[in-house]
Length: 319
Image 1 (spheres, one colour):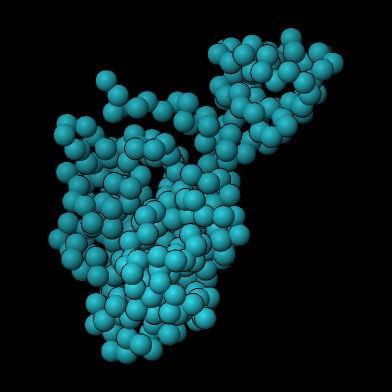
Image 2 (cartoon, helix red, strand yellow):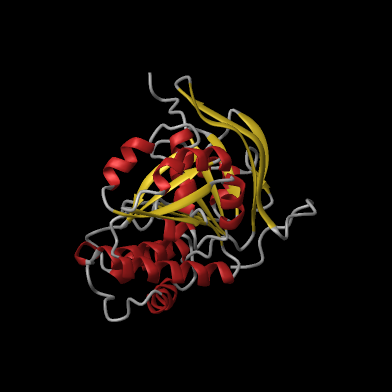
């Protein structure tokens, strides 16, 4: 999966995507606003954000699958406006919905994809991919009869069969059991280690933490990006973990208080966060001495940051 297109740009060997000022509107609604970012080759880049906030549109623009209203940039060394067709031939796209032929077998689906891309040995390519994705022994099973996890493996095999240089994954593990999700991500990391660049949208925090870098997009605006540690640090959140009884009452009292930017239950504990440390501590001070709660200063998690960003996001599709 190495050996991408050459480019006169000096950063082409290390940067897969480099865009500036991308904007896109549909029906008078701005879906992507002045977005600039870089994605390193061979990296897994995760996109997080509320439903309908522009993640999928952003990913498609980054890869030349949609033309922006304004802005410029390159993908795999090609101009996203002028060279969209060249980019598309080097991109694998896996959607949330299974899109292969349900009435064909595993082998037939992969052989069909191989022939579609003009691969010289379609049977051999399909056979090798079946071995790679762990579907040996299921070659003749109809796709319709596969479980969600096996369908996911087949879909991944199909979109990586033509050796793309860039892989787009749109919430690929929705509705899949935890073991299948873990196996899927192990395979994604193996592909990235071979040089494949991966863009993935997800709502799962554990998946976001497995990405090399992440971006949080809310209603077209890029609010945070970088490694997970960088995004957490940039949030400037101070967090307290509370254990004890009657969380509902405590949540109701703390929500909306000056200095308290986020209150959310996490299992058997409650996370209370704020961006102004002094104001947060002043807000929780009256509750610290109550014996039914135990307060512990803690590091903010990615989920704390995610919830805080969601709370600050404005839905530009309402009204």
